[in-house]
Picture (cartoon, rainbow, N blue to C red):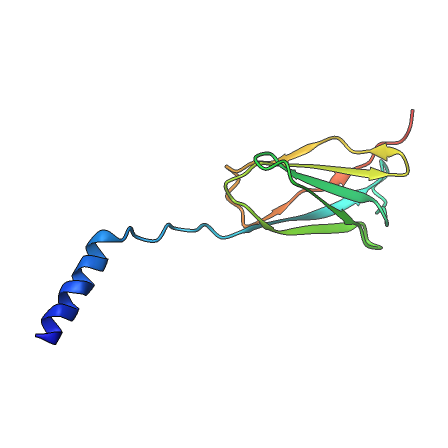
Length: 113
């Protein structure tokens, strides 16, 4: 009797509960910030904005000009931009259709004109 009841309850849970949603793994974007001559920019501020939530994160580049953002939602587009001493790079897009788990996007800060 007890085993029939246990089996019946298990069957109800299997049939009633929806299957777990497939979770795509989080993405990473990384790259280097350079000046117009290709020299790395230490201390540049890289900003990344989630196009869905509008959440903005920032990263200050290391000595070699490198930055990285981890744990990005694979179902969202992201806009990246670098700023350094009043100058900025053009905006770059990391698309949700880009299937790379680790995307490489370099940013170049233009000189003042």
